[in-house]
Amino acid sequence: MKRIAAVMLLAASVVGTMPVHAQKENRSIGENAQEAKKAAKKQQKYAKKNAKRQRKAMKKYQKAQRKAAKQQKRRTK
Image 1 (cartoon, one colour):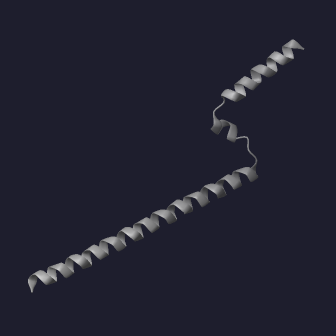
Image 2 (tube, one colour):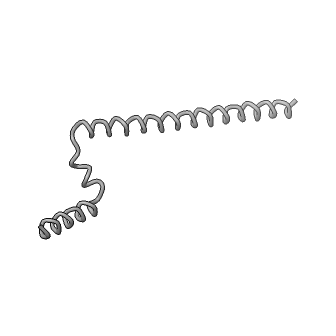
Image 3 (cartoon, one colour):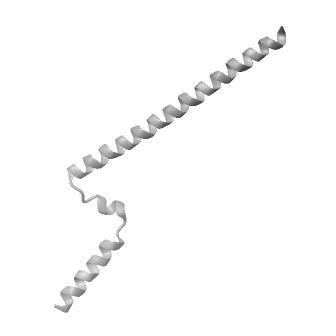
């Protein structure tokens, strides 16, 4: 009885020290699909956010260019 408890305790400690990625390998196909879907959605969110930042920066740059051209026009008159 004590030997079985000791072996189970040893096995539990080995599983506890196992890296997370090694534990994930034992997942079923459905769980992997869900994780992939979640990761794809997260990636899409970040891509959309970066595109929005880029559009905003471009708009700001164009506005600065128009303002500079307008000021340059005034100086040449």
